[in-house]
Image (cartoon, rainbow, N blue to C red):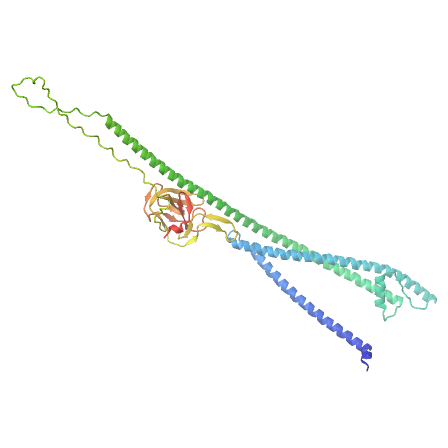
Length: 455
């Protein structure tokens, strides 16, 4: 057989058409399967994010660490993004369903008008047939049914079939019934989508409330950190003022003592200068017994006793000269332990806030004794906001040390102490999250890094 004629045969055409349909169905099934697989994966991802968000919302903000509440906020915000995307998709689907329903109902309404016209024609045809005046089938034109969509439908419905007007009317009524059913189905879908949207809005509002609650907690913690930082800055200024005031008072007292000693020495000198020296004692000269009177012109001249010069006044004690500021004492560690927080700016690991740390934090057990890092005089022992129970020791040469967060004191202001003497005990008073010693070295009241001065 001629290949061209074979291809043109109805059987071959139907075979090719079936193969094309099968191939199309297979491709469509593969695409549907892939779409279902992607949707399943998306649903699983959303379910995991929802579980994370629900766990985050149940977090106890009182006991949670900073990193935990920040992570909880991230989880909830991620779930909110999923919810908002799903809500948008529901809104779009509902809008599409509503548009489809309107289009289907409009088509059904338009079809109803054509059905009414066709029913009139069929009724007229029936009368004509009954009366014997009409014997042929009805031929419909766009003049009879002035609707291109309806004409298309009629052509599709009547191809290869009888175009009897009653049969066409039945098919039109069936089509109208299908359209109404489709509209009702789309309407039900839109209503279901509306219910989903309402439920999702309630869930979204709850998630947003959870997120806001955690944001407020984070804001509160940040504010607390800033307040504590401000408190420590004020405490640093207070300590600086205490040290400089104490140093100024020591200088004033030394100057006053020196002035008093000088006045006392001058007073003694003036008193000694105003006291008259005793009259010189004459040395008697033996006179012969026969001589009753001295020989005229022979006045005896007494030999005066040499007078002693006044004694020098006692030396006046003076203040010890101050050495250069770089003459640091031989400092030792006040407590054994590792440095858990160094000197300088500290960046919060969660919030990123920056706070200046004016000393070092030494890890130590609560109640451990704190020894003086060098000998000196206790300038201050008392409460300092932020520092808690605090001792400041003056070591001379402009150097002083500070010991903070003590649980209790073992010394008092004015005490003269030696290296290693117990000043107090480790605690966590003031701004502290656990027992440790906050230790500072200051030069002329200003904090410096202690580590270069420690062995």
